[in-house]
Length: 267
Image 1 (tube, rainbow, N blue to C red):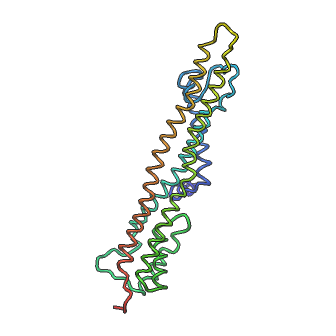
Image 2: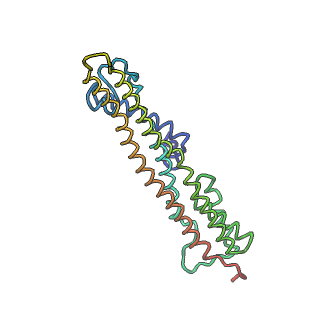
Image 3: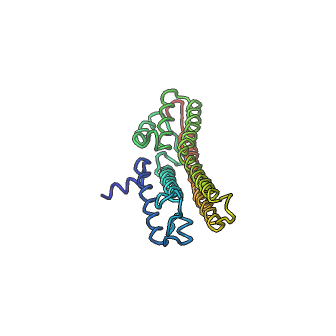
């Protein structure tokens, strides 16, 4: 039972983490429902939970715009957690001593197979940036015996990895855009309902109910903008850390492998 949580922590997979994030979002909504009495200002703001649902109001608790934004936000937090743990894991490989770092070490052809065997099972298409670079550079040097070609392969690989990191944030960018969009949709619906309360033929208008409906409609945008702002901040922090891990892996490979390669006769 302890292996699964450990695996999710060390190498989380979105296919597992995102459903768990949705469950946590539901638990968060349930907790707020318990803590915030129905009809209180906080309950109306964060949950759109009224003591008595206004007549003609299309959203019945818990099926409200605010709760939908909460679920989308937790989905984004789950994705951010996956990217953060992967960035931490990539940076942790820098301290595992995959390459010799002593000042006097020079690497010849016969020194490379043990180094490649050490990293062969440590990378795949999604994980293991540093082992992947080491493996590819050693393979290229063994095939060409050219340091220049090995450097060229290293630079090309780093560009591809940086592009791949950027592509991994496509879903998260969409969620960050979707949250305020859903909030604006709730506001538009609320304004439409408030305008529907106006009766041009009536001498007096229910100004109190109209103002209350307008206030509730703007709450959806307020909650959405707050949660979107938090996700945008976390997105930039985590993406910067993952891109830094790629840069550090490239620098580590350049310093401890490329610069130590000796392509001449054996010493």
